[in-house]
Image (cartoon, rainbow, N blue to C red; front, side):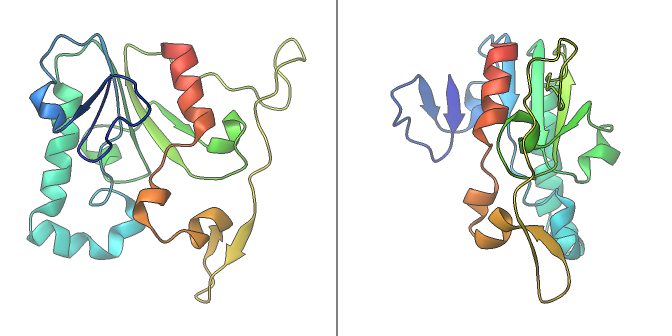
Length: 177
């Protein structure tokens, strides 16, 4: 089952449209959660002081920790590089979309409980067969001199930037489902 405040379940799969806290104590055996990173990711560090003062950062931390502390035996919480590494602990795994066949770079942290790290094969696996890594995609240099993945630079919409790439989602479903 999926749960989201906005998604309408258009794919026809079981979906709860609402606050995950409404159903978090319903006896789930596994949760893969993608808590909002708006107030937690280092990409927004220049706004941290304001977010601390107005309570937004603490709200983000509290939500992340509520998910982590929920009574669900198997968990994965996904977030970009951010402050949770210093608040909860460092992530168990750091992955990239290009590890799983999508030609993009987006550093993604996974905090795991009772789940193994996602397997991904480099150029060759032990049997010289499965290859999951692909190229990292194109990059652009911004006027300030910062080097960004082109897909990220081209998409200013936070909803597009926060999407999980299909290769990672498929790996989670195949390996943990």
